Structure formats: C-alpha cells, structure tokens
Length: 292
Ligand code: PXG
Image 1 (cartoon, rainbow, N blue to C red):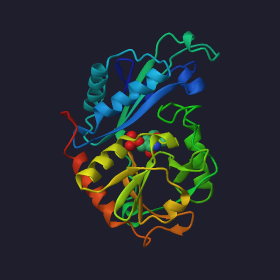
Image 2 (cartoon, rainbow, N blue to C red):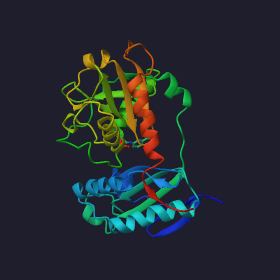
Image 3 (cartoon, helix red, strand yellow):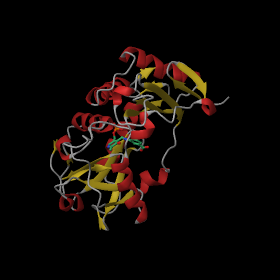
C-alpha cells in the first residue's frame, strides 16, 4: 500500500499528492508548518503543535480554512489511513494559488497538507557518543525581520547554517544572533548544564520556543534541577559541564565538542542522559491516543 497524503480534505496517493506551481508556498515560501511525532499510537504534544501552527499563521495573516478541532481530526485520520503507530507528521499550510506577484490577496484559499511517514531515526551511536558541532557565520534571523517563532516555509536561514556546517564536515551548527549570543541550532534548541543547573537561551535571543525544549524544562523541574533562560555566550558553551540539543526529530541528543573545544569530559553527561531517559519515558506515556 502506498502512502496517503492529506491535501485539502482528501487523502490521495503519494504519487498523486501535488500542488500548483502558482502556489505561493512554492513561489515565495509563503506558508507555515509544524513537525510532530507519534510514539506507539500517541501523538506527542499535539495541542501544543497545533496551537503553534495557528499562531504562526495568525502572524502572517494566513487564514487556515479549518478549526483546530478539525485539524486535530485530520492529523489523526491521516495517521490511521497509513496505519502508522510511530510516525513523523508534517503539517503545512500554504498561502495557496495566486499569480506571480507577491500580493497574498491574490491567493483565494490556503492549502492544507498533512504528510505522515515512518520516522527516520538518527543513528543510535550519535546518542551514545554525542555530536560534534560548530558555530557558523550565518546569524539567526532577527526577530524584528522574520521572527524565528514563525515556523515559516522559508527555512533558508537555517539551511544556510546547515550548509556551512556540512562544508566543514559537521552535521549540525550553532547559530548565533546578530549580537553574537547563542540562539539555537538549525533545527534544534540548545541547552547546557553548569554546576548541576540547566541553562537555555530565552526567546528574545532569536530562539524558537521549541516544544521539546518546553517538555525538557518540565522534566528538569520535576527532577528538581534548577533551570534558567539566560543569555549564553560561546565562552559559556565551551566551558559547560554538559551540552545537548532538543527537537521533535532529534529528541534529546548529547553534544561533546563545539568548535574543537571538548565539552566536560568529552562524553555525554550524566544529567543529559537522565533527561534523555525521562523524556523518552514521557513520549511513550503521554499524548493524544489513536487506533490504527
Ligand atoms: N529550532 C528550530 C529552528 C526548529 O526548526 C526546533 C528548534 C525544535 O522545536 P520543537 O518544537 O520540534 O522541539 C525546531 C524544530 C528536522 C526538522 O528534520 C526540525 C525542525 C523543523 C524542520 C525539520 O530535524 N524543527
């Protein structure tokens, strides 16, 4: 059975899942998206993802032609149609079909696309050995230009940083903001442990308020680990006891080297591994249940 994709109310075969070349999502990256996961027939933080999707759309004045309750149903129905228990879910809202000009008023109706697929996991050894990453020249978008809270279909800012990492032989990059403070990675948030306390940059640094980030902060608070949203410099990152990244795709992944500086003892840290374990427990326990 081939994969079915939801497009504007219909489930269509993957090969037939197509949109117009006049869609402003393609012409201008004019649209928004979410990346969501399900674990063992539980969609993790579905409400939070849908709320963030509607907030992104609200800011760009994109009217999603369905309610949040209908969106929730559409996501679940797409998972069911594909009999997926552990899935990566991509919801996209494009501005829709318009003409070749920028004017979004020419686009009469937004398109809703829901893609569900098997999740491609990162190699297990990355979680055991930890990642080596670098800082890159491309700075994170200014909040006053394109706010990183908007998960827009234009991810060039992040892709530029990813290319710079890849060109230097690394898989992931730390993006700094225009002031030189740590913002986040290309598709993940960053955390450090120093003296048994947890630190991550605040939204005002050009950091996306990740849903995994919030979940990890909640886990840390539950474990009585003091947590802070603080400005972080490269110096502070280099001298962290432990470092890790969080994101829907990566979950919690340890970092052991930044710009050739060893972090802590060069191995994934104890608190990181504890948070990783507890996070994995909640993803298998909490969420919106569905039957396939
Ligand atoms: N920062 C950025 C810039 C992101 O795009 C996160 C942090 C983590 O947020 P959540 O809510 O997922 O904890 C993201 C999320 C991928 C991929 O394939 C990841 C994201 C977007 C698109 C693709 O790794 N990002």
